[in-house]
Amino acid sequence: MSASAVRLIRAERLSGVAEYAYAATAPAGTRFIFLAGACPLAADGSTVAVGDYAGQAARCIETLAEALVAAGAELADVISTRVLVASTAQRDLVAAWEVVRDAFGDHDVPSTLMGVTVLGYDDQLVEIEAVAAVAD
Image (cartoon, one colour):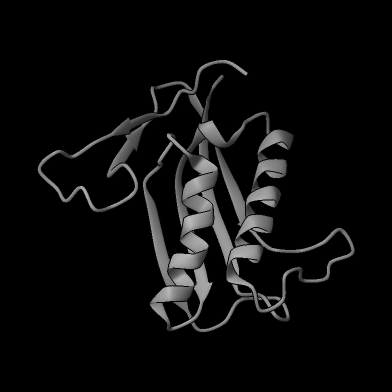
């Protein structure tokens, strides 16, 4: 694929502790892709990696990547993410986040990491929402 239309913005006056850019833009004429929440489901609809936050996050990334390909995009075209983790324990959120962060590598898109009470599928612990932008 060609170079991404997404431009990540660093906010040098804000904390460097965050492991993502603080903002992102895409030029006029860009086609936006709004993805459904990527869930940790196998092809048969069963939840994978039951009880494993990192394992479910990894499957969510695989699902997200496949949806992006179907829309003519890739991970480098993602302009923002929201990572939902069914837990009140920060360590569980971090376990999921580390997988997401590592999957995006240098393309550290603006992201929100949230603990939620419950997600939609049996045994589901992680879901990743994303928006992508591609030159049309």
